[in-house]
Amino acid sequence: MISYKELGLVNTREMFSRAIEGGYAIPAFNFNNMEQLQAIVKAAVETKSPVILQVSKGARNYANQTLLRYMCEGAVAYAKELGCEHPEIVLHLDHGDTFELCKSCIDMGFSSVMIDGSHLPYEENVALTKQVVEYAHQFDITVEGELGVLAGVEDEVSAEHHTYTNPEEVIDFATRTGCDSLAISIGTSHGAYKFKPEQCHVDPQTGRLVPPPLAFEVLDAVMEKLPGFPIVLHGSSSVPQEEVDTINKYGGKLEAAIGIPEDELRKAAKSAVCKINIDSDSRLAMTAGVRKVLAEQPSEFDPRKYLGPARDNMEKLYKHKIINVLGSDNKLAK
Ligand code: G3H
Ligand code: 13P
Ligand code: ZN
Picture: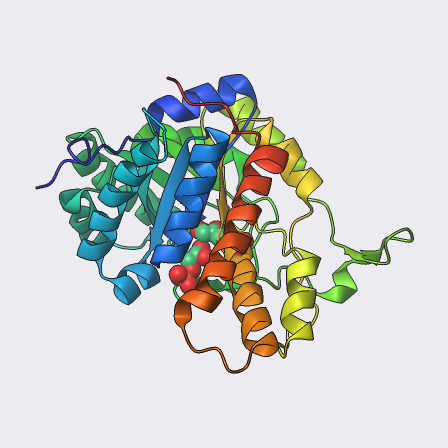
């Protein structure tokens, strides 16, 4: 058993209560490689933001769980080297789907886990989440549960249609499971194709497609049932048009990729939504950076020459999210 505290990591409890109080959200960025991790840590340090490093089951299989854990221990040391005396870094399992997977991460040094039983019948979701909470809390590890189903297709996460969270269930779920935070479904979804063009209308000023609004009435009803309880939004990439354009300009083929408008996320961040998950935007920023270099300098074959600019592009994106969307800059406790 490796304690996350020995690795210099923190759980989400304190940072979430400060975020709710302060009307901002903590960034939860997925990572599976060194360049993403460097960019996240640098962005968090330079903006003085707490940050959640998220590892999905797919990322764990890609990069190896042990290596990822050491990388996060290294991330704490790197943050200090960059001048942050008291970094607040969480290592979080994203979309854990079994008790065994959550236990394995807990035993390995993760400081927070998500158990995603949202696709299960309600009572099974309650039982599984409770089992993970009981194990995790022995070691002061925080647990995120999920109620309601998000649409979207990723490596390990897939559903055809979303089902909004039923606010009538949230008190029972939170009380019986003892979970520390709750992911809810209010119209966000995973991946870079969140809406079909026919669901959107054209903004006459920008000519860009605007998706239907998030179901803020569901969020409001959840907050009314569970005042002050930490709420999480998955599927919160905005799919920046400039990254999509760069990818397409340099040989990519991303047609009709549409994300969540940033003003909707800004509004959510001011509420009890205290964790906002972003993965696809980082993938787009990285891919745009790599494609640009390889297209403009076809004779280049040193990975540092294309991964370096890709890393810079991700860092810019992370800083933008922290400062202009989530509002978590200058929010470190010390
Ligand atoms: O929510 C899903 C995350 O974007 C992780 O995706 O399973 O492809 O690593 P992945
Ligand atoms: P995006 O695909 O919108 O980035 O969502 C990521 C996510 O929810 C990770 O759990
Ligand atoms: Zn997710």
